[in-house]
Length: 66
Picture (cartoon, rainbow, N blue to C red):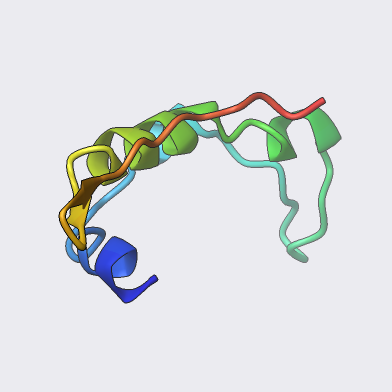
């Protein structure tokens, strides 16, 4: 996991791809928006697919929740 986490150092996910699913008390107000992780998942999959671990390539893919 350290090798995967290391690649995320400095990664900034832009706020305007998500919106807000929380109110001022940090309580979920939009369950559908809370589940919208596709942009982040695609970004992580792209980064992690470029890593070689112990001479083996990694394959990252975002899978939609069911």
